[in-house]
Image (cartoon, rainbow, N blue to C red):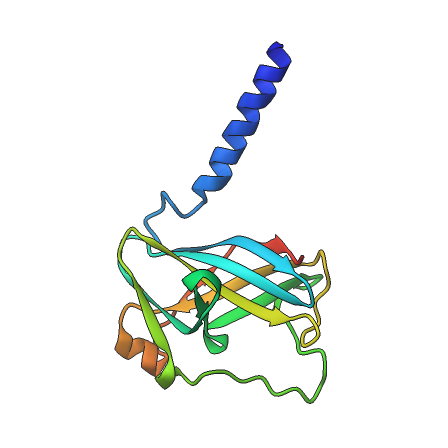
Length: 165
């Protein structure tokens, strides 16, 4: 009985610690992957925490459940390898990656001390990535619209690592 009560308490503490996330009590901007799933594509839900000051995050479309989709050119997916973290590579040598140009980006303002969830997805057929590999996400954010449009002084928010589903 006591063992069961201790296990239940420990489980509740661990769940509470996970749900509060690393960025909730920080004064600096942060990114936290809150969900990752896969079929032939990998879908990522990522929550951006603004820190003390507001942040502007570009998005290029509307995803499921009215969650904005991050722009391809404003995000980087990295894979952990023997030489550290590197950008995931296209599976085929002649692939040309593109995206919505910055002048057509829409932006989501995240007030200081707030957070906002975004979505992003990519096809496992297009990139060299395997189930179980460690991935992380780097999202570009800015303090103002002018800097975002000019792509100057980006604040790069790096998530913790997670396993590719």
